[in-house]
Image (tube, rainbow, N blue to C red; front, side, top):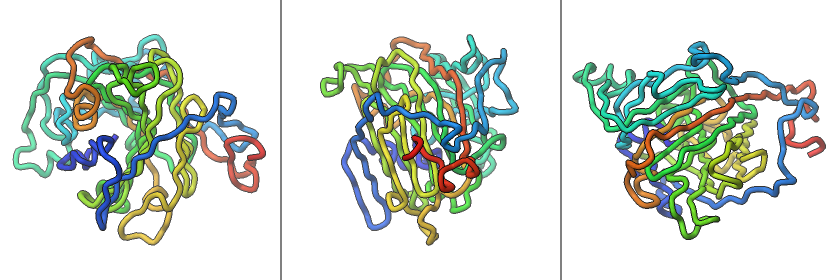
Amino acid sequence: MASIFSRICCIPAIAYLGACSATTDTASKIIEKGTVAPAEKAVEPKNENGWALAWSEEFEGDTIDTAKWGFDIDCWGGGNEERQCYTDRPENASIIDGKLVITARKEEHTGPALPPYLAEQAENPEATASKPFTSARLTTKGKAAWKYGWIEVRAKLPQGQGTWPAIWMLPEDNVYGTWAASGEIDIMEAVNLGIDCAECPGGKDNTILGTLHFGGLWPDNSLHSTEVAQPGSLDDFHTYSIIWSEGKFTWLVDGRVFAVKEAGDWNTVGSDNPNAPFDERFHLILNLAIGGGLPEERGLGGVSEEGFPKTFEIDWVRVWSCNTDVAINGNCVIEKGE
């Protein structure tokens, strides 16, 4: 999900999937079609391959663990004209039957017009705004962040025109500058799942995306994205993963690789380090947006008000680190002997 900074005034950076590569002297947008590996090539983080569980959230309690998760609370719309207010109400995020359930509701709501870091710079920091939907956005910022690792999230995605669930990461510290110079890692995002789509397998949109945002400060930001048809039923839980190592990202769905990006596929302004900006700690974000540039410019267009409330269900989140004492030649691998 393109970051909050991109949405201030860079809707084209969000709506990138409607066009092929667009390049300027300072920014580029590269979009590729991926292919999911065969089922027999599914992989998992194994201890014998050097992977050690470093952090997990199984959602086994009765309430959301605020030691692990914080809430973004605002009606800003992400600077992308998204149509929801984010709240910390249990109506929008709660633990149900051992799962985190983020619920988008069709209801008028009023809240802060801007997130705190923008409000403090505004002429009226107490300004409010109203939106026709509510939802939730949870983040581990200030509570947990990682540099490299194998990150997996088991989730069931909502369907319908205008829905935009995302599993993504932002830098814990903007070492290289504000968005997108310090990077953004989109593990999984999807829009408009389940709507009629003649060119999609099964006739329904089942596209998921994996994306890196990087480059200079907006508007000189760049992206490199891969989209692929998700295997299996849209109504089921699937595991969305990314393996992030020095100079390399691998995206997976249900343990099957669908995209790989390496240093050279990205860049940052103001650094000679080929791995920058993806050599710093990033925190995790789980959210369900309604509307905004990407979903409203794809599919049937706009936002359908049918079928609310919409739910984004997360069964668990797990983060493995590479134990170099066990790893082969100091490098953790996807499969033993690889």
